[in-house]
Length: 441
Image (tube, rainbow, N blue to C red; front, side):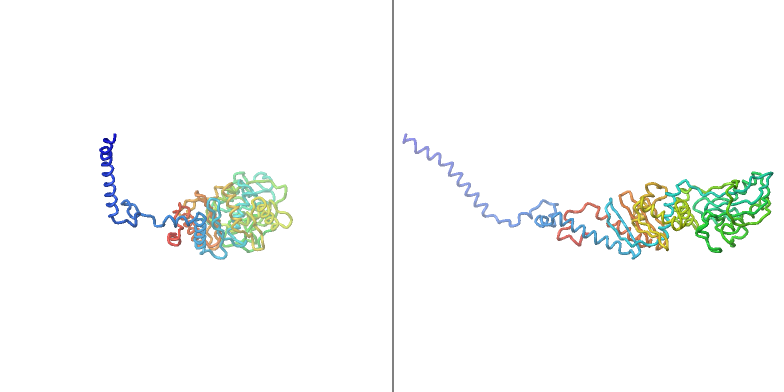
C-alpha cells in the first residue's frame, strides 16, 4: 500500500497547483486596473439623469407640494382680480369649489333691479301673462255707442299707433297696435260715439306720474305718452294723451265722436267692445334679456312690471308695500337677500347667483351664448358700464357671477380662467421641489 501512495499524491496535487496559480494571476490583473470613482456616470447613451436627486425628492412631502400649490394659486388669483374696483363684486366657482369671492356690500344696481323685476314678474304674473287693452262702453245700437267710449289700460308699455310706430322702431319684441281696436269697431259697424273718449289708467292710479314728467310707470300709455298729432307733445297725463290719440284715430277711420278726450274710470257695467293683447310675458322677458335689459322705446316697461307685481300681491300702502312684499316673498323662497330702500332694490353677487340659478332651471330661454376665457358658455351679460351684470355657466363646470364695471369684470374673469386652466393641468411631481419653486409657475 505504501508503494502506491506517493505517485497518487503527486498526481492529485498537479491540478490544484494549476488552479491556484491562475487565480493569483487573475487577481493581480484586476488590481492593476484604475478604480472608477463615479460609476453612475457610465450611463446608457440618450438617457438624461434627473435634475433633482432621489434624496431631494424624498424631502418634498405631498403635504408640502399641496401647500405650495395652494399658495401659488392664491397669489395668482389675487393678481387676477386686482383690476376690480371697490364697488365691483365677482364670484367664480370651479366644479362647485369657490375659487374667487370678491364681495361688496349690498348696493343699489339699476341693472340688477331690472333683472330682478323681470324674473319676479315671471314668477308672480306667470310667463303666459299678457297686457290687455280694452275698449268698452254701451252695446252699439244701429252703429251708435250711446255715451262714453272708455279706453281701459292694462299697463301695456308697448302700445303704439300706426302713425307714431317709428317710436317703437327699436322694439325688442312686437309692439301692440292700438289700430286693431279701431278696426274692430269699424268691422262691427260702429259709426258714432255720442259721449267722450275716456282714458282709464286707474290700474296704477296711486302711481300716476306728475303732469308733464316722462313716466316711469303708467296704467295706460300710448306712443310713450305722445299725442298722435305731434310726437313732441304730451297731454296732462298719459291716460289723457292716449284718449286724445284714440279720438283722432276714430275720426280718421270715419267714426264721429260728439264729445272730447278726457280721463276717468270705467263704470262696472260697461260692455267690452274690442280687446287687444300684447306678446306673452315670456316673449317680452326673453327680448328684454337679449337686448341687454334696455327698452328705449318705452321708458315705462320696467316700472310697469314692478307695478303689476305690486298690484297682484300688494296690500295697504301700495305700491311700496307691494314691492317690499315681492322682495320678501322672493327672498323666502329662493334664499336671496334683496332689500327695498328709498333708492331702489339693493342686491349682492349672491342674490344675482340665486336669480341666475332660477333662470337657468325654469327659464332657460332667457339665457344666450357667451364666450368667456375662450370657452363657449351659456348665461347673461348685460352691458351697462359701471352697472353691468354677468352671470355665466360653462360646460366645464365653472360659474361666474358679478356686477360692476364690465371692462374690469371681463379682465378679471379672463385672468381667473387662465389660472384655473394652468392649475387644472396634471402637475409635475417635482414642480414644487426646492429647485423649481418660483421658476416654473
